[in-house]
Length: 366
Image 1: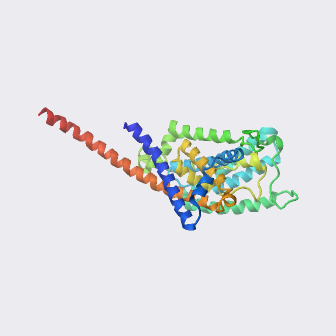
Image 2: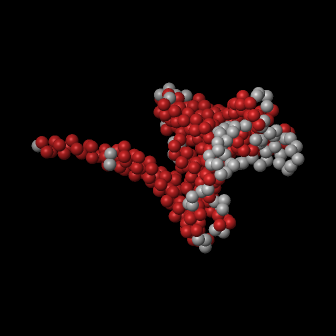
Image 3: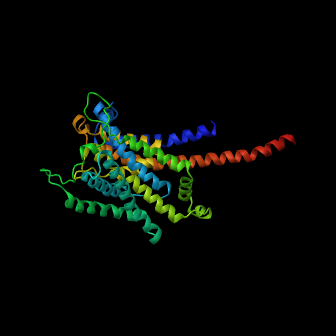
């Protein structure tokens, strides 16, 4: 195979190997529990209905934004575990701004989006500043900030909540003219694809373009690979850390907006949580590449949706899918390390062969 083909095969082989390992391990868990392996996988891998397809796309849209936010930090060698807290405070801020309706129509929507990005960036920036000024690991600070964000939003929500006559504590409802309309994908179902799917695609493109085609992206990737080499090249490592955390938090601020403007229309006590942690797993699975992340987001959304009927159809808890997703995270790390070591050995053999070739030619001339 040519070197290019080899790189492609190795790049595709790692996630495929991880998925196969996850399939085997999950099957062993099912066998140990006395459940039918064939029935479970037949249900999970069955063709989803039209409604399920729309739900998968919607869930994948949210997962994708979350994973992109995590991937920005990963490319800088920063482990931003705080996406969950960042999108919480950002979604709350966007809901408050949009609910007030200070601007007409989609200008109000745009104002709320800007507010979400700024608040998410600010919340992540706290961890960045702690890292460069006090040497605090972003892993520790973002975990703590997640807890603070949850408590802060719960406190502020009680201050601004409106009485809707029910048990749900929520902000003012987003005006109808500021909501983002969905896309009718199938005529036989009423549920629609979030209009924010286009924003997710735009974020993925900007992420790819900035990191791959700009000087800033090169500096970010270089700093993530080696801070020593970055300093030698005149790059300010502290500046790159803070900017990377701000960008990661800004992207995290967008995570809850498809739900806010496409489904819930207010931020309440039932607003979906845990999206930031799913993003970590998906970013790992997708190797921080926008296409890989998109496939990983669709896979996780597919597994989530297909697990909903496991209890009814097969009599197996849908938690088995959570086990599968967790195993995927573990196996993908192992698979990538196996592939990396194989690639290193392959390169070493190619270098050794190239070095031996001139000696062979000289011997033939003699």
